[in-house]
Length: 96
Image (tube, rainbow, N blue to C red; front, side, top):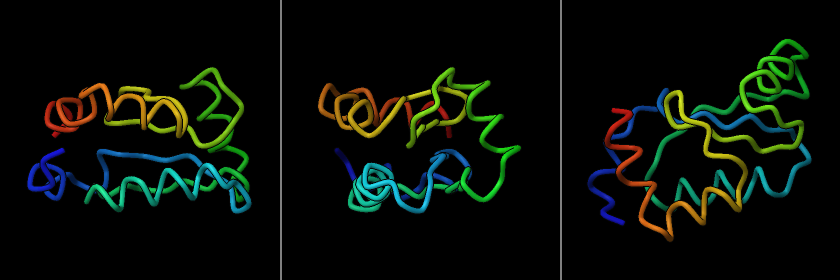
C-alpha cells in the first residue's frame, strides 16, 4: 500500500469501535498505525449510547467494528482481508 496516500487520511475518516480489553481492537489499531492511517477510537465499554449506535450501524455486537467514512469494513480480519485484496486504499481515497 502506498503510505503517502494513507498519511493524508483524516482522523475522522476511520472509526474503530472498541473496548479496553479487546486484543483484536489493539491489533486493528496497530495495523492502521503501521499503514500510516489515522483513526478515531470510540470506546463502547465507556459509553452505552455508542455501543447502541455501533450495533445499529454494523448489526454486530463484537468489537472491533471498523468504518471508513460511512462504509462498514467489519472487524480486524475483514480489515486485513480488504487490504490484502487491494480494497482498503481506494476506500480511503474515496472517503477523503
